[in-house]
Image: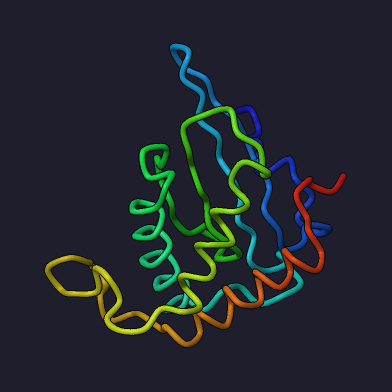
Length: 155
């Protein structure tokens, strides 16, 4: 079997950042997948599951209500728990989405109240949420983006 693109990235040198991981084209429609890498794989602990679940809920609700809402295909966590995928229609670059990602981070950091979709009739694991820890990870990620903008995968 052919190795998938994400397995071709050296995770021993990968740092937090926002990366274009792939572009797919079908019938003339381009979809771009971004890796929103919150932690350094294999060198930092993975994101706490309740915090990652909260990040998923808040970021997904933000993206589906912001100015690019019609371009959103998917937002969700990576299985390794080191980040999230942002999948959007269009042949996009990091520069195209960075302002929205920063705004999304600000939304999470400033969020107060009940987590959207965190009710038993709306979520299969609604009790597993941690807003304060989600804010911690997103604040750290936003600072990493501002101080050490990493947008190209290391060789």
